Length: 311
Ligand code: FAQ
Image 1: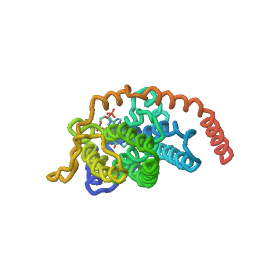
Image 2 (image 1 turned 45 degrees about the vertical axis):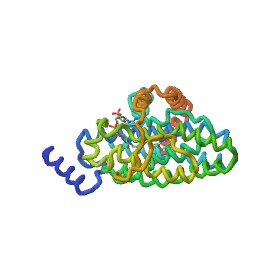
Image 3 (image 1 turned 90 degrees about the horizontal axis):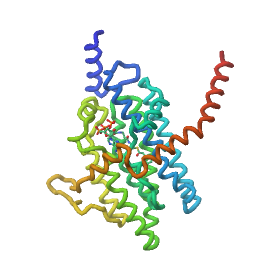
């Protein structure tokens, strides 16, 4: 078949909602774009363990510690599924990790903010996992088979993450005035960065048009952000916390909430390596690589022994 014919088969599959699988022909740009997005997504899950891990040794009870530990371990698992999905596109996991450590590949902006209080553990679960779910539910229908199937499992686990965060905050809101203030302060710091997780406005998003045409993305950045805002308002009310946005109001005509302008300068600063914790996160990942090298070596030695036995 000619390249044109291969491309037609590919586009017909996209049109008919047939998943693209690793061995199928695909345009090189489709492959590269997926490696970029899935790789960034995998890095986010792994780097995302650090802000919460900061509180593991200071969890207020054994129950809270067990919940938090389980959540963080889930994030590690998500990172591994996603690295596996990216590897089906012919890239090497270590090369992607090296690219992230060298600042050539990104991870989600949100994980460059510090977790300053115990309430932040609840807020990260509620708002950060909550925003991630809105995005990931849509990605269950992404056109690339391994990514889409990975998302199904990830979404189930993210729901637990979101609920544990919300429940933690509900408990704090039933506590003392100081605890309630801690929750409000935490939400004030995380709300805007959570909105930035959806990426730049559609008009400033260089990858969106092609990713939407290839059904890698099923909804635009702004559509998903709006969905998240609309979903969140009731949850704020029920929790008894105010949204730190004086411009937030219901728009009858649009059938959605209007909200204030995001600080895009801050967003671009953070994704270009100049957020509050970028250096610290990369340093933590680099150290984790070095400290864990012996585990990888041992696993490789064991695998080599097993295959020598089988031969
Ligand atoms: N942070 O043209 P677009 C989680 C970059 S998982 C950093 O709009 P695209 C679970 C973008 O890469 C959270 N960079 O790009 C958890 C591109 O740069 P490049 C991760 C961002 O790809 C919870 C440039 O800006 N989720 O939280 C961000 O079409 C708790 C132009 O942007 C995913 O990765 C950002 N927020 O749309 C774990 C979901 N936004 O590559 C632990 C999958 C944009 O050209 C604890 N990814 N950029 O150098 C996606 O859905 C998309 O990639 C978007 C961005 C929507 C993030």
